[in-house]
Length: 113
Image (cartoon, rainbow, N blue to C red; front, top):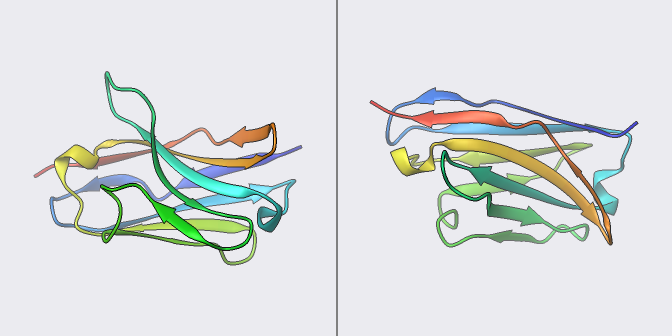
């Protein structure tokens, strides 16, 4: 059974940092493209970043320069620095390969003073 479990979210002040984790089981992350998405209240889910099966990282415009992906072992991390209130959202990880995709349950990130 495939599972993706996110953690590391929480409440942080503007300018602060968080590191999100996506622990996987049942898949080999190096065989999948691994993504982070986020969804803020009342908004559509949006792409944050991807690390490809080949190890190349791609970032959305709002994430580039502030967020960093890494993928040691069978876990994916998203280091987020310089967080702002508009980064508040539920953050989800996704594993995708061809037409097969798996999602985690999400972790809440709240940026507020």
